[in-house]
Image 1 (cartoon, helix red, strand yellow):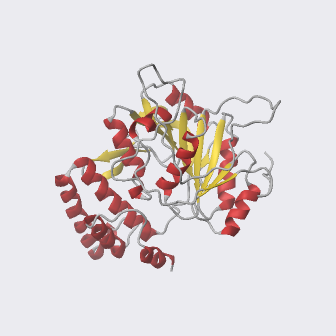
Image 2 (cartoon, rainbow, N blue to C red):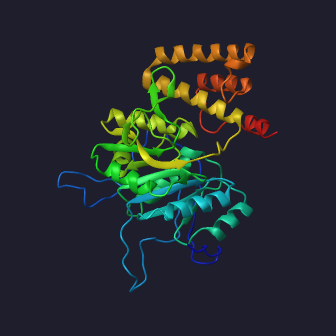
Image 3 (tube, helix red, strand yellow):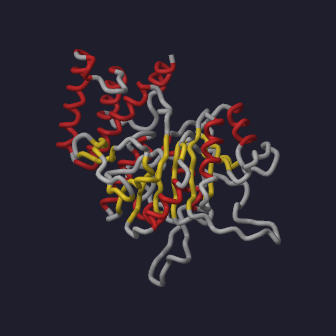
Length: 359
């Protein structure tokens, strides 16, 4: 695998001037044109996104160019301020031995990081620059929309900039979901021996794995490497952008399951991700605020009230007994998460909290 050209070369750079295309409380449903699917009595609607501009048509090939197999997977890698890790991740996915298109979505990295990213990426990887840190879910959505306008593959996927798929990961993952017509969302195996499940009070929680190899039903997919059937996304919509980061995969899975799609983890398709990517206070804030939002909207007000009482009890218990604190602990962040949820303030975490966590 050779290094990509500098920004003045052949690498395609796509700029999105409007990074704040937030999803409304009612989830957006994006339908891509697919002539092979439409029937005489079906309407296929394409949802345009004028806020994202492209500079070239990736399907256009010079005269006489050799034909290449269509991609089995369109993969979005969400990047911010880690160009070396992002380049390594892109190469690992391109070396999986399956036809895959990779789009690097940059969430507002400084120009020096962007320059290193453009100069080092393989030429086959396009870059979509959002100009601001829109969050993991909104960044993934920008990439999904880009692919949906450019002859999308049957499967779309998303991974963070430091995901490390093991050899054969994509082949095993796509083979397993391809054999299940009802599979809508799936994730690779992060190797922790746990299965992501959903509780009506606590939201996203782990449980002991019950399958050692192959498909295991799950409550939601891991975001370390998630794939979605294109028709599933067309049916249920993309990530709810109010979540910004954390819990968005779980909320998407709830909508998919309500529409009858299967959700699972593919054991044996290994992927690793060592970096949390955010400071503990920001993680604590987003996980609690987003869990309260998801429980309220998908379980109801009674369950949301009980979950809020539990959150307050956990906060008090953690202040008194340090052993009761979770891996991410910030009393100030938790109080702000509760207050913002009650005031229905969602989206990016408060800037003052981000600045405090950086000190």
